[in-house]
Image 1: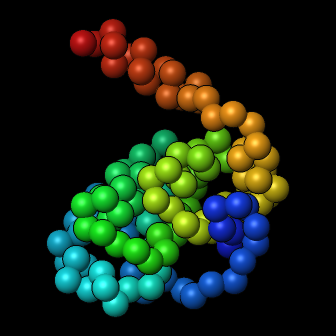
Image 2 (image 1 turned 180 degrees about the vertical axis):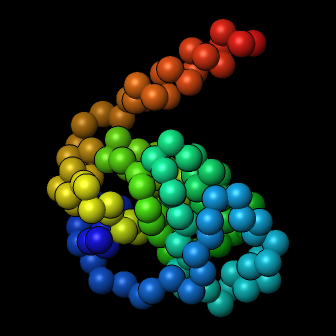
Length: 126
Protein backbone atom coordinates (compact mmCIF):
# COMPACT_ATOMS: atom_id res chain seq x y z
CA UNK A 1 0.00 0.00 0.00
CA UNK A 2 1.45 3.35 -0.98
CA UNK A 3 1.96 5.90 1.74
CA UNK A 4 0.78 9.42 0.89
CA UNK A 5 0.62 12.83 2.56
CA UNK A 6 -2.24 15.34 2.68
CA UNK A 7 -1.47 16.39 -0.90
CA UNK A 8 -1.77 12.75 -2.07
CA UNK A 9 1.96 12.69 -2.87
CA UNK A 10 3.76 9.42 -2.23
CA UNK A 11 6.10 9.63 0.74
CA UNK A 12 8.30 7.41 2.84
CA UNK A 13 7.89 7.76 6.57
CA UNK A 14 8.49 6.01 9.85
CA UNK A 15 6.45 3.02 10.88
CA UNK A 16 3.73 3.71 13.45
CA UNK A 17 4.64 3.04 17.06
CA UNK A 18 0.98 2.49 17.95
CA UNK A 19 -1.96 1.17 15.91
CA UNK A 20 -5.37 2.11 17.30
CA UNK A 21 -8.29 -0.13 16.39
CA UNK A 22 -11.88 1.14 16.30
CA UNK A 23 -13.25 1.72 19.74
CA UNK A 24 -9.82 1.57 21.39
CA UNK A 25 -9.52 3.81 24.40
CA UNK A 26 -6.87 6.49 24.41
CA UNK A 27 -6.24 6.29 28.16
CA UNK A 28 -3.34 3.86 27.75
CA UNK A 29 -1.40 6.00 25.28
CA UNK A 30 -2.13 9.52 26.58
CA UNK A 31 0.92 9.52 28.90
CA UNK A 32 3.13 8.53 25.93
CA UNK A 33 1.80 11.05 23.36
CA UNK A 34 4.84 13.32 23.64
CA UNK A 35 7.16 10.46 22.67
CA UNK A 36 5.13 8.99 19.79
CA UNK A 37 6.05 10.21 16.30
CA UNK A 38 3.44 8.19 14.36
CA UNK A 39 0.08 6.84 15.48
CA UNK A 40 -1.89 4.73 13.01
CA UNK A 41 -5.69 4.64 13.19
CA UNK A 42 -7.28 1.60 11.58
CA UNK A 43 -10.40 1.68 9.39
CA UNK A 44 -11.61 -1.94 9.10
CA UNK A 45 -14.51 -0.85 6.84
CA UNK A 46 -15.04 2.40 4.98
CA UNK A 47 -18.40 2.76 6.77
CA UNK A 48 -16.78 2.69 10.22
CA UNK A 49 -16.32 6.33 11.21
CA UNK A 50 -14.82 5.80 14.66
CA UNK A 51 -11.34 6.55 13.30
CA UNK A 52 -12.43 10.12 12.49
CA UNK A 53 -13.41 10.61 16.13
CA UNK A 54 -10.15 9.10 17.36
CA UNK A 55 -8.03 11.44 15.23
CA UNK A 56 -10.02 14.50 16.24
CA UNK A 57 -9.72 13.56 19.92
CA UNK A 58 -5.96 13.13 19.59
CA UNK A 59 -5.59 16.57 18.00
CA UNK A 60 -8.18 18.67 19.79
CA UNK A 61 -8.51 17.13 23.25
CA UNK A 62 -5.02 15.79 23.82
CA UNK A 63 -2.90 18.18 21.73
CA UNK A 64 -1.06 15.47 19.79
CA UNK A 65 1.31 17.10 17.26
CA UNK A 66 2.77 14.02 15.54
CA UNK A 67 1.73 12.10 12.44
CA UNK A 68 -1.70 10.45 12.54
CA UNK A 69 -1.89 7.84 9.79
CA UNK A 70 -5.10 6.37 8.34
CA UNK A 71 -4.74 2.68 7.52
CA UNK A 72 -7.24 0.18 6.20
CA UNK A 73 -10.38 0.77 4.20
CA UNK A 74 -11.26 4.36 3.42
CA UNK A 75 -12.42 5.99 0.20
CA UNK A 76 -11.11 8.87 -1.89
CA UNK A 77 -14.41 10.66 -1.15
CA UNK A 78 -13.44 10.64 2.54
CA UNK A 79 -10.00 12.17 1.96
CA UNK A 80 -10.93 15.80 2.72
CA UNK A 81 -12.76 14.72 5.88
CA UNK A 82 -9.78 12.64 7.02
CA UNK A 83 -7.54 15.69 6.65
CA UNK A 84 -10.06 17.91 8.46
CA UNK A 85 -10.04 15.49 11.40
CA UNK A 86 -6.26 15.67 11.73
CA UNK A 87 -4.85 12.83 9.66
CA UNK A 88 -1.50 13.69 8.07
CA UNK A 89 -0.50 10.48 6.28
CA UNK A 90 -2.42 7.69 4.61
CA UNK A 91 -1.65 4.09 3.71
CA UNK A 92 -3.95 4.11 0.70
CA UNK A 93 -6.01 0.96 0.19
CA UNK A 94 -4.84 -1.28 -2.65
CA UNK A 95 -8.18 -0.96 -4.47
CA UNK A 96 -7.66 2.81 -4.88
CA UNK A 97 -4.64 4.32 -6.60
CA UNK A 98 -3.06 7.35 -4.88
CA UNK A 99 -4.09 9.41 -7.93
CA UNK A 100 -7.73 8.93 -6.92
CA UNK A 101 -7.01 10.65 -3.62
CA UNK A 102 -5.27 13.54 -5.40
CA UNK A 103 -8.32 13.91 -7.65
CA UNK A 104 -10.58 14.02 -4.57
CA UNK A 105 -8.72 17.12 -3.38
CA UNK A 106 -9.43 19.16 -6.51
CA UNK A 107 -13.18 18.66 -6.67
CA UNK A 108 -15.36 20.53 -4.18
CA UNK A 109 -16.19 18.44 -1.14
CA UNK A 110 -19.83 17.44 -0.95
CA UNK A 111 -21.33 14.87 1.39
CA UNK A 112 -21.36 11.46 -0.23
CA UNK A 113 -24.43 9.36 -0.86
CA UNK A 114 -23.83 7.31 2.29
CA UNK A 115 -23.75 10.48 4.42
CA UNK A 116 -26.92 11.81 2.78
CA UNK A 117 -28.76 8.52 3.46
CA UNK A 118 -27.54 8.50 7.06
CA UNK A 119 -28.69 12.08 7.62
CA UNK A 120 -32.11 11.37 6.13
CA UNK A 121 -32.52 8.28 8.37
CA UNK A 122 -31.43 10.25 11.43
CA UNK A 123 -33.91 13.02 10.69
CA UNK A 124 -36.71 10.54 10.04
CA UNK A 125 -36.14 8.78 13.35
CA UNK A 126 -35.98 12.03 15.34
